[in-house]
Image (cartoon, rainbow, N blue to C red):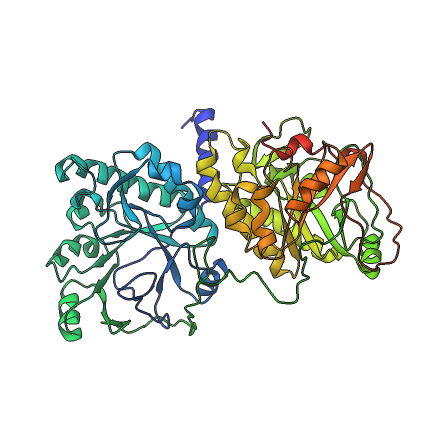
Length: 567
């Protein structure tokens, strides 16, 4: 039989693309489960012996998800796909867009509003970003809550008959989006459209079907050998369990602040100690800031004097004498030079671009194919440099982690990760700021976690629009041209927690630049005639260090235009 060559090539390409998607987890009927995402009065649950563990996507740490998976659990991440929650970080980062899709308020749930499911074109980019975060954090699947808007008077002037078709279409889209990412997905409640959706979903989760005499609807999942995970909030345990057994549901009852099961953990899984000290993905209004690593890391307090020998305008050199912190280019500086600086008492921070591919870097040249898969659009007037597509975090992390390890191995005390404001710079074709901002925040947080895991400090470079979301994670800040763009006040959250703000300007007089810098406790330097001139003196009792400048002219790029919306 002869085949059209173009068809064969297309099929091969499709097969290669599919091979990059993780295999979806299968959840057959009868699986025991743990609920650490939601409940009545924050009911606690144990993971020991339970195959499936449900956690909150935003509140659970990536390392915790990995620990559960290493112990053999299937990790399902809870998100609300049917409401706007005003405490969530991605809402706070993009309020205007989320507000466009708001429907009616959700009963007694303060801060929560139904989504207008007739606006699917606006909803999908927002929700797709959440699904990608779930994939990037290592979740095996998703529990999408509040997907029964159509039955809950969620839109003024529209009833169930108006909205049912929209609900089904939106729910099916969620399953397709999850499956494209290799994630399983559970149908939460929404019993009225089970028959329409059972073939799309991988399992089901229900609350209170016994109370409302609706459990019989779930026979369609059981008949398809798909797990049904149930929960009840009233009734006796014996009655609840007897009823659950009729429908082959794995049901738990909320009693006195904890979940009590109608089943025992039967899977041969190791004991997992579950602590309720969950950590936010970012800016989740926790009482305590996120755990940002060990206590042995170097501190960079406000008013730390610094030297910049990594980047600037016109191959500028800077002196290290008397300056506590020295910034160098990680690839270009010798390991012996880093050690010499450290021996003389300096903190050495190594510059890398964490947000672009640079075609002259050795790790790019050694692995062009992998780097090309994460490229976005070219970076303005910077030859050889291309933005990273930050929506592809699962592909970026394995490339960027070796750079962080290289910095550690060369002796760097910390990292300055540049170009971490892709989301504001039209860096990915067809994707706007609203769609990319959650990815940017998630990627930046991953960078801090990776640096801290290796015992290094890390600076937030520019990216002023998300300072509030990130200040707790970063150790200090480095900025270019905030005076020119009247943005220096946006760095104040760093000063408020005694973290250094290292500034640089390329325009203005020294007196005016220094006067403005003093308002914000910034340690600012001005580019003047081929050298950096400081608004501060070296105050640390450090010996003079002969700094050997090894950078190639190509690698020191004029950054002034690059700082603010490179487009």
